[in-house]
Image 1 (cartoon, rainbow, N blue to C red):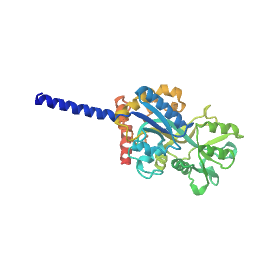
Image 2 (cartoon, helix red, strand yellow):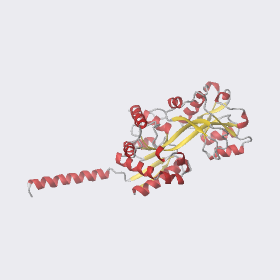
Image 3 (spheres, rainbow, N blue to C red):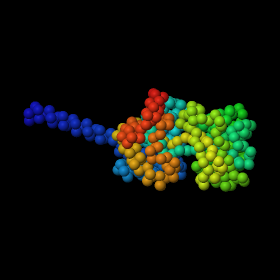
Image 4 (cartoon, rainbow, N blue to C red):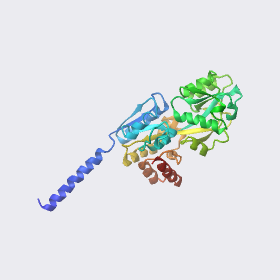
Length: 337
């Protein structure tokens, strides 16, 4: 064998080793963190796992946990592939804000998957019609261990010119407990996710029904996002799914994001977002919460944390990455440093 042929053989061998190493770096199994079984997060995580497994030919499973903040650090370390998290926790994670003690620098957004309208619920016959009317009333402010929901509850009060000093603060064990406290008269007002079946049930079971209190005049999007990054305002119209709304009502809102961590490469993120985007309309037929997000709105320029580089690459290729997307991406990348 000549020196030239030996050199060529060595180059080929090194190339094969490099290619093998790169192949080994590909995801072999996809795990998606979610809240407990029976939750919407678990429903969606299971749906995404099914879709990714079918299209990528990679085993994918949903992994339930006690709460979404629990598994964010696991995703960040690369010990779990993906996780479903609300936008407030997502934004806080990369900034090292409460409830996180340090920055989770590897958390990257794959897609916004669910929009969650969030408002203050009172009994319709209580006479309470605005945030200002809550002065001196018993209001649920602390919602279980979820720090950012508590922060949003307080921001809701601030939007109407009230502070914790103006109300009698009540603690609850969670969103369902929030509803029960108002129904049972243990609180005058509490925060709820408007799409919850339990809210419609409360409306049907309480004499006179319930009412959702709108944000105060000070509750602009900029104000909310400043007080609780990842939140904003949203207008909700009366519908058969929201019989407790009699007129269009502006409430707070936050999103649910599918996030990736350290082990997800640009190539893998590209493949994941491509599967979700191209199959979005099909998945919307099977999973109701997805129906509030249009196919080309799964990567909005309102992200409180950076999108994955693979997502940016895909969205640019299909012409769905705007100047607003790029401006927000650079802003959140800077905040996450």
